[in-house]
Image (cartoon, rainbow, N blue to C red; front, side, top):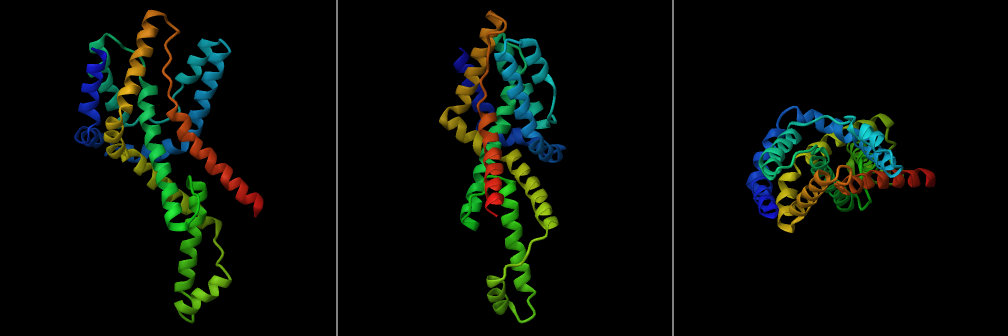
Length: 257
């Protein structure tokens, strides 16, 4: 019965048509909340790791208190998905609980897709590894500054290309920061609507179904024996690994000069 209900829920909400209807709710203040949530995502990971550590130390109350503190803005899309999950799947099965972790996994999955997009863009456009804004912004800013310098060279673009090929133009830090801010906005928007593509793909691969079945198993275990239900959400850690790789890559480049 649970698996049939899960399949119906996934088909209704994560098919191409269902995902498009769901993402209509993102055409709201989500357009401003999404970039803020991208910036707050590392703090969210630290909160989850702190909660996990406290739970391992057998301090469940402290763990629940830490993880219950809201760090990210609740988007209209997340609110709608949470409502549908409770109303259409969990309540008919006699289950009710906080579903924030599950809803957040979709955001993390979309961020993973956006990270793969930046990696692919950097590889094709710049032949460089760019897992995030920290590595993509300086590269993109340098290319734009070089192009602008060549175009404005007094003796023409052809000689400008030769000159700046030998003596690359310098990139002001303000330009790098502005480029990074613009990239955060673009990546946040792409992450918000990436689900239109990733939801049907995950449905075909059975990932949505397996994730929901894990959630139901955890809730049923919690109902039988409070404190035993655990919903594992590795997507959070995978998404943040891109940020860590981005920071590590830039640290290496800075050390090498």
